[in-house]
Image 1 (cartoon, rainbow, N blue to C red):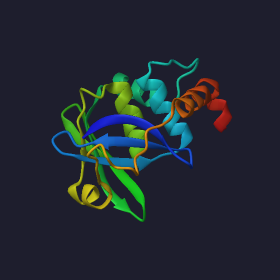
Image 2 (cartoon, rainbow, N blue to C red; image 1 turned 180 degrees about the vertical axis):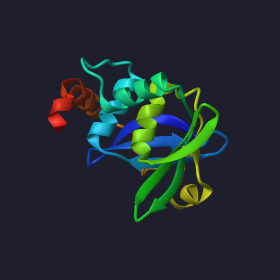
Image 3 (tube, rainbow, N blue to C red; image 1 turned 45 degrees about the horizontal axis):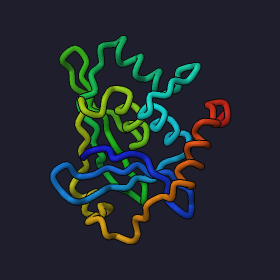
Image 4 (cartoon, rainbow, N blue to C red; image 1 turned 120 degrees about the horizontal axis):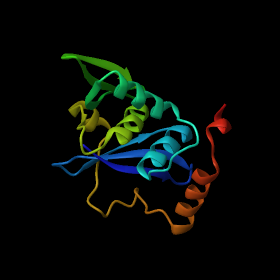
Length: 163
């Protein structure tokens, strides 16, 4: 899978991660919360916060403990909730951690989306994947005004707003 980005679903203004099959035509939309969307978009745009956010801290721990993120996998869709796992390696030992997809992607964009592969279980894609041929009316393009409104929100939000 490839990370296409974070979009805002209209009319609910709910952020959604959009993953796209690398060698296919399905997309996988995963709805996430505003704080996670802010974290992902900040990292994608190279915006630095005055203090490390949670995902920045996690990356620092990975770096200092010589932990390598090998892969992100969307493993399951259960009761409309996506589940994911991180596959990690430290000192030759490989392990897996259960995580929220939004946290996995927020960490991934800090490590480098080109250096860590994203996978989605075929059962997840079969249930929630959307074939996007470019003419799907249920996937509207965001108006410039809506994009600017979301960017304005991101520019004004701070971690303290979610305390």
